[in-house]
Length: 226
Length: 187
Image (cartoon, rainbow over all chains, first blue to last red; front, side, top):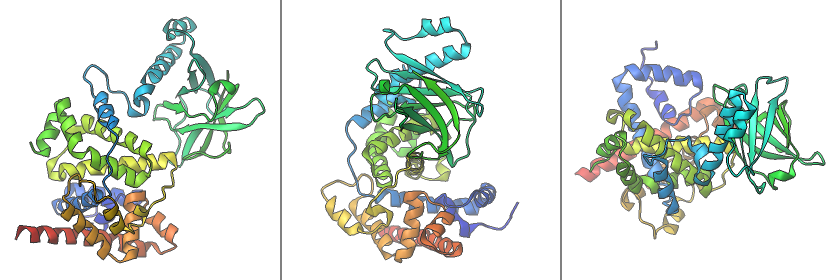
């Protein structure tokens, strides 16, 4: 381990602006060096002051309620990406259905389907690039919104994400949003569609640069039909 | 009740303590997220996520590693940057260059400051204004855009060594300026 102090690198470290190798070196040193720890704390305090100097904007009143609802004791804490209040029911339905899929029984799937059973679901299957991948889209009764849950999709490097494509009858593709999967290949997406989801008969998922592309450019990994 | 006590109570899963923390810092977290993302919806999402993270991770807060405010604003800044990257948002706005600080102050003069009193906030702005513009830009790109030194060098077509120097000097001066102001306050 490098025993020399890393004082020169501490400001950039505090800003998270080092490259991964540099960061690792500084981290190792700081962990064992009280002098550099104290220096780092001073830089972090300066950044906190910077944070406090931004223009103050009053958040909407509903934000406090939303924050507190997340920690209500009666409710398990779900990942916030799945939570955003009104969408909770959706995510729950999708997760339940995915669990039932994983258990493999069509009967079980039916028994768990939420009532009234007017939600439509689309099964997505992995292509050759991701043969084990499975996915499920749940579309709201009025076809306006939906949730996608996938499992066993290979995790991607940081600069790549999966992108959902909504395919119109004429073959035009619109983006339904981008998502990443965790180490287990699990990912979820609240679909943002330019038009009601029920108007798209087919769906595909491709690998794209992080943040997504205007149209599909990478390999297709999953597909499904309404 | 001080901030550290609040965090200890949050670690014991007391919702009232989280509510109190939100009342103290909710506006700061939201405002910071807004300064970074320039998107009200994303900033709400970031804020929710930050307080959920605090709720879950309060037990891992170590006072010796920094004040609660430092810890909280770091979580908020990192979460906002994550969101920026995930959404591929390209925020417009003067906070990226940290120009126009004075006009922002004037515009928002009607709002109460959330934590810093207005004179302290003015000190930070003075400190920023005193930085050479190229150092200010490097600091802003790193803090508000989440760019690495390498990315900043590529963006500004400058040698990496130059950018490293600017980042280091900028934060060092900001720190020194604030320390000086604090010691003057105590006299």
